[in-house]
Length: 354
Image 1 (cartoon, helix red, strand yellow):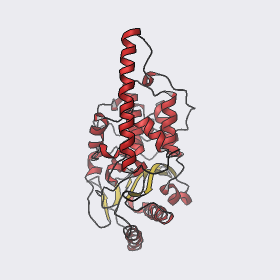
Image 2 (cartoon, one colour):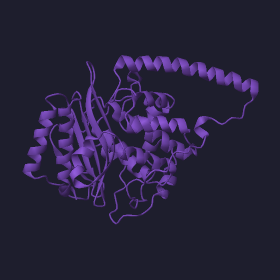
Image 3 (cartoon, rainbow, N blue to C red):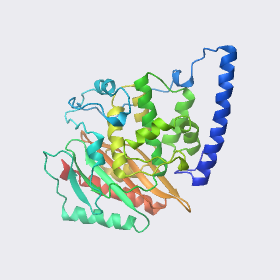
Image 4 (cartoon, rainbow, N blue to C red):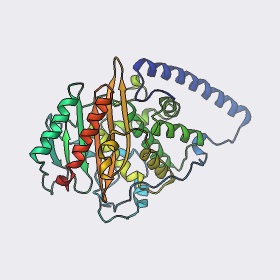
């Protein structure tokens, strides 16, 4: 198992070159073999997986069918996925497009917002504002930070430097997993058993070697364009790992929230992986509330890269929330505790967003 968090830049470059060279050789061999044998063996992506049946994602809510397909789905059959969502909870979540999330103010002060223009702006108590500010100040003694906390029922939220883009380390694994599986659903494809095992290890155990093995077969121009639709500027220099803002991660997890409830085998499988990550600063922060969390965090402390980051979905008492916290803090016990404390304080202020 590789070290948790992200690879150093040189390690990523080395793997990219080695794997790229090996992949090119493999492609040539497959092409030549195909010409000689005219083999009809299906590709790995078309094979049926036999992964164990996962637990379901958060209970689904009734979608607002007035919205059209979003650019973030990059050609996937969004209508098919949307139609599959079951109406199961009394509290309907808003069908939020990526655009208003990506337009959240990039102010360098803690602010509330509401992405639904017809609804009032939430108000934080002075005590909550002060406590959140103290944690942010402590974080920024060791690196930049930004966060977005959004109530999916009301459209109200709290944000700080929503556009700051530090390195997010292994939090990068969630976007690629979501991208590949929802695209496969749209195209009627499935991952092989081996690919599912690699992806499961990458998400649950944050295994970097497994992520490399899986990810380099799925990265490319289409993935870069998909990331760009969420405001993420992909840079191949860093391999599969990203620099991303809190609002970009919130927009990705917003679409992932609906996908995880779509009822497909891939969606249920992915929900189970996100629910069983072996490290979550968000889950630690909200543990006393009994909330359920789907997340993927990232952490690293090296000479040229630093991050203690987490993003995902929180569900509690029939309501769903998005939370993305990105920081440039070098990974440490103290840095992780600060992120957990910030998650706890933001979640404690949720009543102000209802």
